[in-house]
Each structure stands twice: as C-alpha cells, then as structure tokens.
Image (cartoon, rainbow, N blue to C red):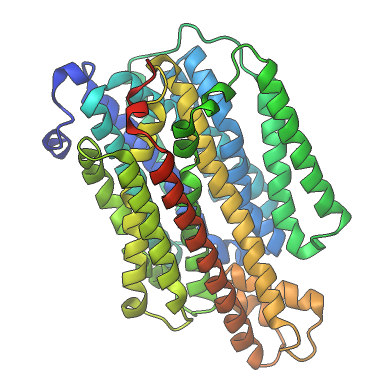
Length: 511
C-alpha cells in the first residue's frame, strides 16, 4: 500500500472518495485473475489436451469459449452494474469465476472444460466492467488517471507472471494447478468485495436483452467460423452458414440498439470520432499482444521442443514491460497528449512485430529479447491509459456503459485475434506442408498443422517419417512470420489513425 501512496493515489483527497485505497486494492486483485486465465491455459494447453485426449477443434475451444462469452457479456454486465449496483455485479462475477475455475481443475472431460470456460467468461465480464466503473465512480481528475494506471498494472502483473508461473505449475504439479491458482486468488478477493461501497446509475432501466442475444450470437458464430474453418473447409456449408449467421446477428444487433430507448451499446457515442478511435484502440494494441501470449508458448513447446517453464520464461521480455509501465504511463498521461502516447504505443508494436521475423525454433533469449521488449513496451505504455480515456468521454453515471463498450471492443478484438490467428496459422502451415511429407494426405496435413499450432507436434507425428517434424516446424515458422507482418501493418494503421483523429479536449468528459 505504501507504493500506491507514493504514486499519489492516496492524495489529493478532493480527487477521490473516502476509502479509495481499499477500493483500489480490491479491484486490482480482482483484475489480476483475468489475464491469468488467458495466459495460464495457453501455456497449459498442450498438456491439458494430451491428458484429456482432446482433438484440435475441442482443444481450441478452451481459449475461444472463454473469449466469446467474456466479450459477449461485457455490455450486459455493464448495464447490470449501472442498474443493480457495481459492487453486487463484481461479487457475483467473482463467485462465478472462482466456481468455474474449480470445475476446470477437477473435471475429466474436455467438453466439460470447454463449458466451464464459457461460464468462466461470463463471470469475468462482471468482474471487468464493474471494477472499472467502481474506479470511475470513486476517483476523479489526476487521481483517476493514476487509479487506472494501477488497474493497467494489475493486468500487467497477471500477464507478466502468468506464462512463467503457469509453466512452473505445469512442470511441477500439472495443468490443473493453473486453474486452482485462480481459485485461491478469487477467495481472497471475495473477502474484500463486501467492504466496498455500492454505486449505480439512478437513471438505469431494464437490461437490453435483445442487444445481448443478437451480439452474443453474432460473436459466437464468428468464432465458430474461425475454429471449424481450417478443419471443415472455409467454403463448406457449415463455415459459410456461420459467417452469414454472424453478419445477420450483427445487423439485427444494430437495428435493436437503434430502437431501444436506453441501449446497452449507445450508438450515438459513435458520432464522436475520438470515441470511435479510443474504443477501437484495443484492436491495434491488444490484438497482437494476445496472439503472442497464446501462440508463442505453444510454438516454443511444440516446434522449439522446450518445456512449459522455459517457454514461459522466454516471454518475460514481452510481459514485464506490461507490468512496470502502466503506473508510469498513468503519470505521464496527466502531462502529455493522449493521442501522442497511444500513437507511439502502436508504432512500437509495429516495430516489434516486424523485428519478430527473427523467430526460429531454436531461437533463444539473445534473438527474442529485444523484439519482444519493444512490443511489450508498446503494449504496457497504453494499458490503463486506454481505459481512462474511454470512461472520460461520458458522464460518470454512465461509466458502466462506457466501460462495457470499451472492454467489449477489447475482448472482442482478443477473441477474434485468438480464433483468427489460430485459423491463419493452421491454414498457412497446412499449405506449407503440402507435398513435403510422404504418405500424408490433405486431411493429415491439416491435422499435423493444427497440432503444431497448439504445441502438440510430437503427439501428431505418430508413425510419420522423421523429416515430418522439421517440415512442420518450418511451415509453422513461416506462418508465424506472415502473422507478424500482418500485425505490424495493423498497428501502423492504428498509430496513424490515432494521431490524426483523437482530440484530447474531448477526453475530459462531455459538456
């Protein structure tokens, strides 16, 4: 707590509500759990899938089921927090999150794990939106910027230590311990949440169920398209049907939101260019970051032949800046234009992405540390700053809605990134394997490529020729390089757009 006081979060009193420090501590600890449940399963997935005998598609849903429900329920969670109370939604969210973490750690079946992960995402949505809204209602002015810096540091803490801790747990105890870790953290949070003051939007009305159903359905169908496309074929009836269904659901979502008196997704805010760019910022900031967090550990374990602990340790140059920088960025944000900070963050991510083409199966610390650090500095400098910018555009009584919109865009971007990047890597790897392994047909090439992406290369080799490992590793490496170039282009577009469009005067809140 003394560190937080030194950062200025205990003063000045006019910028915060009484008891602000305990509130910040509870929200920060709750927020630590959320990145841990992304990074941990990413490292544990090869062992988890092998132990439960999961196929490539079922194993992919361990990540996608969580991401889809997380993103789909954020808007509803924000609306519920505004109407029924932010503390109440935070408490229920933590309870659901902890219960489903325990289920994931105990069940013997991959389908049950996938279902529990989906419900875990529902709980995570309640934790994220209500926590950010509580901070917005508690702090104001420079103290709010610093509080959101701490929130960003909390995410950074989970991201920085998640791969390393998960790797150590998988190696020493087993993959189930990765989920039990969140159970322990959640029980600590449950002792703190009841002490928080309650806050709500007095003008909030009923939940926008029509918007919730249409948005959730559209996102789920889009994820289904990306997950099943590589195995079933991109032009197959199931894949095309999923894509069309997703587009129709999203169209219905817009129509529903335009007719609702008080929608959970206030489309009128999108008339403000600054708001549009700020809430879309996660697509360029966190899009690439989550791809590296999920697929680099699996690449290092499968193609690189490293242990889970070694793979987690190699990610430290990427994740440590995300732990250290948000607090500093929160202080700098009070002095520098936000558009400069956010544009610079995207530019650093673009540079790090291009530099990562040095990745090879045998690449070690010397080759990967610098590009990963540049990438991590870009992400870390934006964490917290983005959250504060999003809630600063609306009145504080609608902070739950603003937090819901922003985090929906962020988690939607991450969900699409995980599903889309997995499909891209599997498709490119299968194409790179074509004709290189004797006796392997197209279906076998897709299976080998999918296993390589998930870090399960040895499991997929079976009786294949000895050269199959090298061919699969080369094909996946080439696919990763293509992915890095795509990420760099997206980040560069984000940097230019942010600098050209964002106006800092609009981030002080509407008049």
